Length: 461
Image (cartoon, rainbow, N blue to C red):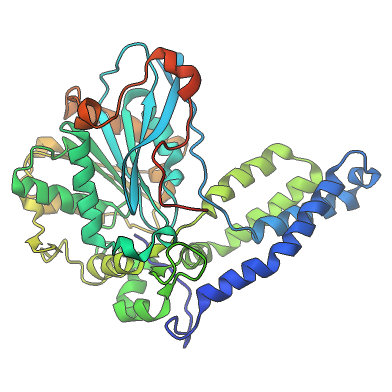
């Protein structure tokens, strides 16, 4: 998990209602957004003669830009309707097959005439401010040759207080529960922040002799040991200490959200931190979009919309999860020091003897530096060399590790080969045999090619 945030000086969240002010600002701007929407429609209407002038196009572009930068972005849709298998388009049925207060397990079922015997892969999405849909490209790339599931984390502001707390130990609980739900012969793929709880969870399962331990785990751009080649966000945690984060970035969910009074690290603060790391790039991108709109370059403008619709969609994290993660991973380096605890059990990666390990890093990663993920191999000291593999991807940054053209062309084939080398055809999961999950038949294709989650989540937008 990255830990960027603004330097707020003497400002203290415990005495300053930042979240309440954020909500008030959003409400106060609503009438202006409505005016901007109306103006955009007026000056984009071809019946309006001004819509064909440079001035009219500039007004419409300004109105759209204002509406977009003041909008609250809700959870994006997956939008994965089909995939290509052996040259044929195959419909995708998206549904939730397991649900808890803070997470759902989403299955991307491929609708085929005959059951496919591809490896079962559970992608553990980061719980670090963005929704799991940020990994849409990751899911899409793995779908043709894998049975894909993903953790769909719930926005903490929508989880009522009576659902209890959610911390790093709870995160590990969920991973173990999901592996039990899916059954044996599952492969884990952890993207960035989950690398630590995934490695910890697998170590606990191996120490217990758990038959539902995964066949393999792939850790991508994760902060296993942030002492190796520390980045700016790693140094920030070391310099500030956990109390600074507790006092400066933790606030409470305001009325009228379902999670009112829950202590959280709000998504808008996380987003502010991320954007501040590359502020010039984001300002330039919005300036370019304005130019695209004025010139009528619809394709370029649409690419901008798609990227920022996802990037600006953020969720809150529970305070206890955020603080425990920062303290354990970035301040104390508990896992590589052999001091990490999962409830009353010590996390010992040397207990891992059977679960194959693949680590992937990006040469230009400015969040998880080179060597931080590879450190997992040193910790898994009793894992045979035949079950270990590391890949350093040249010329990609943090997001290029799990998305983009180089990911699809160079990283996905390695993951696929590794998964197949360390696991046979998946056995029938408990959910498929006795917990309501089924494989859709061909006749279902017309009605299930894309559906919303069948299980209602606690998230509201």
